[in-house]
Image 1: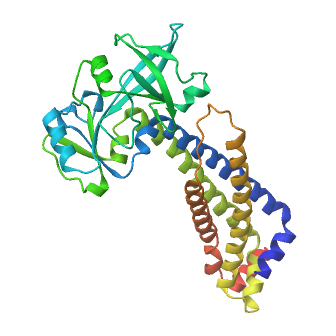
Image 2: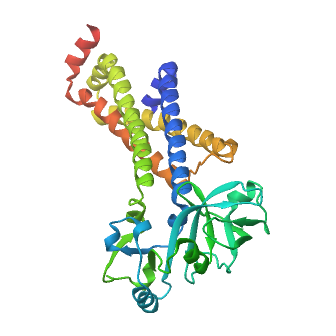
Image 3: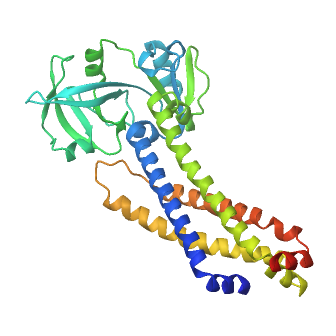
Length: 344
């Protein structure tokens, strides 16, 4: 420990440079991860906010929920046999206000459920993001596929789908708009111990999200960027400590000659890595949370503490691996050889 501190005090600039690079890379990683999670919420919060359970859709729909149609008999049988289950549908569409201005939304409806708002016929409940856009309770909207009108009955939080606000409507209004009385999907909570249902394909929440082309492609691209940055940080640790160790082989030889164990030299490297990484991560976490506060309201940014802790643990792990790999030559070098190489 003392060796590590003495070295860091003696070579402050080298360690400040490494810490700055780790800070910048970790900050970029946190921000991109926050944007990835924000886009994920903006794309599928309606589904992600459901409790643990199983989603069913028609097998013939080939994992495309818009093509799924569950017959009434199957639906009623599943709902009666599974406590807490409900059927629901989601369809993209639009609303027209009294000035004929168009607002894109994702229409959603369901049978009786505590997960979706209870909406009366002719009423509509919107995601709260639309309230921030100036829409008020009592506003009137129309749709070209429906003869009647919708009255805004209220707002709800966390209802986004395919980067659009969700509009909850009554099943009868949904049936009138899309000319079908059959709903697309069933949801059975995990507590009901869901099993196979004839003619239907089952999905976990994550599996269902991966059937959405925009969601899976978007998240895969952003995840690759995040992990690419993490790998770069590990390589930086390995390269930095490797170069420093090469320069200090003479010193290591002297230390080993006077009885300092190889393990103590490794602990010195690990201590330096931990100190640099901890300081860099604390600063980058603070700045990323400040960014979340100052970011524009319409920017989808969501960085929960669980994701922050997971990424931090990964940074520590990959930093440890990089620092350890860089110190392999310390174990292989003999004291006399190291002294001679350092003097040469």
